Image (cartoon, rainbow, N blue to C red):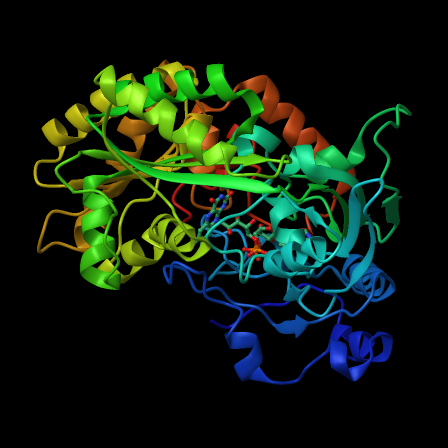
Length: 493
Ligand SMILES: Cc1cc2nc3c(=O)[nH]c(=O)nc-3n(C[C@H](O)[C@H](O)[C@H](O)COP(=O)(O)OP(=O)(O)OC[C@H]3O[C@@H](n4cnc5c(N)ncnc54)[C@H](O)[C@@H]3O)c2cc1C
């Protein structure tokens, strides 16, 4: 698409003068590789790729963008699921040129403190690298998710990612002790010290966590570590449904407290898909409609944890709560259990387009959300195939909907938004959230505008306008335009 650049001329020359060649690759193929999202459903346009190698280079890019009126789209591993990590396909407001700012060159581990239990890393560090670095010092970074081989610390911070250990350790918001970021005016916010106590006013680092790149570019973070667990026990359990699963969760937590680290759920349909497309089979039979992956972790060494879990599962089976259960006997078997859970999104992607929903409700409301959601969608969209999995212990379900067999993207284009609205209305009626952990990006922005609390949306717009008055940072993501602007732009995509 031809673009009418309203920006100051000469921005390319200014960038080339400000940055070393490694930060400004002149390779259209390299740029193109950054423009399509993980789902393969959105391809955007950018005028140049920048790959800064230091916080000072990020500052140079942001100052230049502010001076020349350029839009900036920060990107980490590009595994985000809401369209936030790639630019828009059409012109951004003001027809600004767009720079894709990849943080992948800033990937150093700056330091680990095994006594203070913290690690300082640059924004482009990949999550799996962080896990490995922590383990070398007898520590663990307690956040994990299926995209751990690509997702970066900057992306995880900016989406306030959750994952499979939130039940015990909380989301990214609970795991960041300090942050370094370049603000839209080019200033460096240096709150990187790994302080457990700092009561000196507004916590700006918390404002940047979950901001999806709309308030600045994260350049480094100090992360909270925990001592590496000395023992783990992992079980795969088949049950009759969500009521039984929550009864089991309550029993485990009563008996084991904080030792319960993960409580993940998968419906039978998802496991059928993983078996068909990736060849991995569930450890217990698919006659059980719901499957749960449970992991306990303890700082105390010894086999007692396994025995304790076996006893508790046997008691729950005796009470009619558990249908069948298998304990992982080896580290390899534990890995197989986790692969089944973590590869579900990949199996879904291979099958074809689907409506992705990432919702949360108070944990006790999950059975109601599931039952009413399935019934309402089946009545309104006959033949559509729900696929539900997620982080049950956090009240967070990925309540996805696949088109009826034989239908595809066209069905989604015709019915997807109506189905999404129906589910979101139910979630809101149960006191829940339309985005539990993936964020808003572009995919959920209209729904945030429709369902978000007006006072909160107004405050979000005011914060955005105060910190980024030119609207340069990740335009058209997360923060919905004010209703008046929406009315003026009616008809625009
Ligand atoms: C298979 C799979 C499983 C997943 N499982 C989970 C899960 O269990 N829980 C969960 O929460 N998410 C999950 N996700 C989503 C995704 O992995 C997370 O959102 C992750 O945090 C994105 O990290 P990233 O580095 O890829 O960020 P990107 O996708 O590159 O970017 C995400 C957002 O952050 C912004 N951003 C990136 N880096 C910076 C930076 N340095 N400064 C400012 N803004 C920045 C981008 O502009 C964008 O808005 C999953 C994704 C996949 C593909």
